[in-house]
Amino acid sequence: MIVYHGSNMIVDQPRLVHQNRTLDFGYGFYTTTNQNQAISFAGEVTDRRESGSPCVSMYEVPELDELKSKYKVLIFPEPNEEWLDFVFANRNGSYNGEHYDIVFGPVANDTIYRTFIAYEEGILTKDETIARLKVKKLFDQMTFTTEMALKELKYIGQFDVGRDQNG
Image (cartoon, rainbow, N blue to C red; front, side):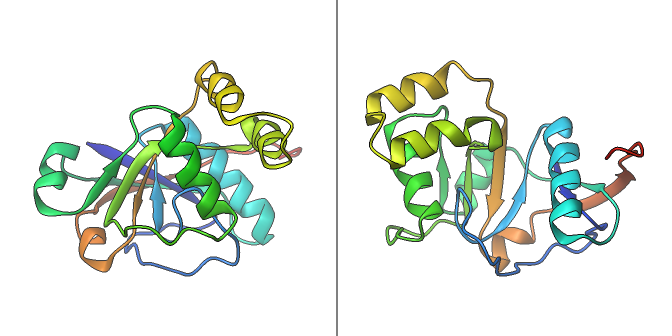
């Protein structure tokens, strides 16, 4: 399987770096099977860091079934209650559950941020939030959270993301 990592620099040797913000699946190296999602993320990272240029690194990794035989893997096939609780706890820094080597599932990206805020503020119930998320086209993400699991990523190349003058 091919996965992509969007950044403001080429990452030919992935490593775990602590973020200064909380993310969907917690601490880890984030990838996606969707090239367009990686391109979008590369632009966001470059803008946020105000340095480098948007680019996407590509890796080959074993299929999920093979990874599950070697590592502790958590898979969310869709945005469901378990996924919402997991992402919500990671994003607000309160997750203290079981630790996984790899987490795979939908991205709670900026297009659904308002839905998450409405849930967080109690405007939407959990069921209403999940129902709204299920109608959205959510891309996936595969997060490697341990050094051992990170070794499964085999760098196979990269490409720069062309941007016009307006970003």
